[in-house]
Image (tube, rainbow, N blue to C red; front, side, top):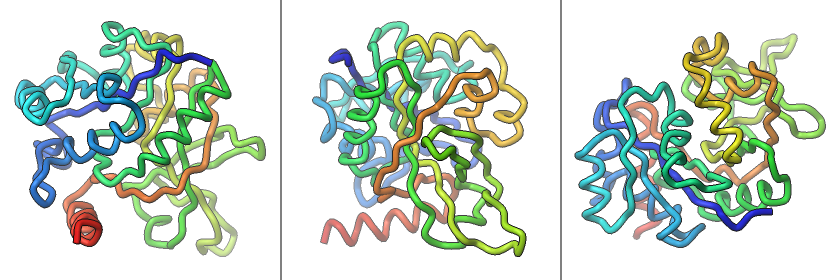
Length: 245
């Protein structure tokens, strides 16, 4: 168990699907600020950093009182950005909360932290049950195939597990909270290109699996919506406005 833990939030301004995504206004606050505010309810502010290659994002984070660390614009994925940032931060355990998770539950972050501390040396990924067929069929939500001992077998944007009748029966989905030991991040960053399934699926956690590094899974509430496309913004706004009434 280590006490040298920090949260790093990767935030790329030039998102392919939603350019300028970290700065999107969500009912008066930017997406990155709302994500940061959730994270500082899980760990103290001085242990939470935004990792970005954008001066605009960095300036914005500084203006609302957050800490940032600059990374290169050459990072292949958010995890590569986290790995680069941690070469300066030097946390023994990095909790990665994606910057497009403005309604993430801080209690879910704490669950991942506690699980990672009790399973030292392991890469950890959060999951939750899929409760509707729309999410099961959605190409923007990675679905999870797991072993009986809660190890990651595979992750896909396709509806898995499939069934003989083609229907939706039960499934799990990825929640974008990860725990990375320093050694795992160093290993990840040394691989200078995306692995085949990682590239095809556009799911970076698969790089570990394809390189023979196991990933432990921990179930959380899943009270979150990752903002990946325009329609996700409206879903998130409805929840924010309801919660803030």
